[in-house]
Amino acid sequence: MDILVCIKQVPGTTKVEVDPVTGVLKRDGVDSKMNPYDLYALETALRIREEEGGTVKVISMGPPQAAEAIKEAYMMGADEGVLLSDRKFAGADVIATSYTLSQGVKKMGNIDLILCGKQTTDGDTAQVGPEMAEYLGIPHISNVLKIEEIKKDSIVVEMDMPNTIEVARIKFPCLLTVEKEIFQPRLPSYRKKLETKDREIRILGLKDFEDQNEKKYGLNGSPTQVERIFPPEVNTDKEMWTGTGEELGNRLTKKLKELKFI
Image (cartoon, rainbow, N blue to C red; front, side, top):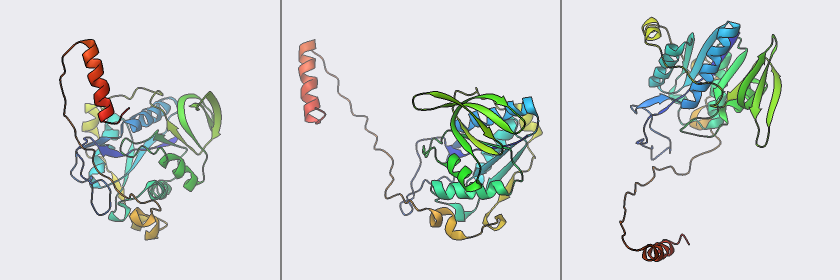
């Protein structure tokens, strides 16, 4: 079975600058890590490979430094990695990101199963996985809690719905987004780090895609635009009060009224 895992490098710190013109995060040179939710997707892929055989590939989109996330995936057991990196991809919203990834997937040959984390910690939209599947024209299921059974032409999964837990069978090729409860991710292996330190990471840009229409990528291909984005103000002001319970209660009520909380 050929499995593809979508991973993303996200900021590993809250101290991230915002481009005042485009309103997007400045990712270059920022301490980063693999999106935590993607670790569960990667672990799921590795477990399926252990049982069914096949290969586990990973794909990511981002600046050149995003290759570090693919190297981490190699240390966990991934076989191949592709990075979609081109300045024309910068500033993409979820639709443009999904389309870009779908074009990258088409360059990777036949894939039976695509796995994504539930969401990313920087965007939190949980939309890219399903939108990718729509662009690829394949069925998809979100919020997968458990792999029940793998058959020759399909997979049976347990999914977390708003009020129920449901079981569904979906035919290959398909896309699943998984919850963090599905498996506990393994740690990167130092031995695999040494074994894979020279393993190739294929880099693809717009010129490598079947569809090279620049209006479908990056800011040009993003129908949604961020009007304003800014880091939250840090407020560490504090007051220490002493007194009886009645005095403190009255003072707290007065303070809440001053702040217009009540």
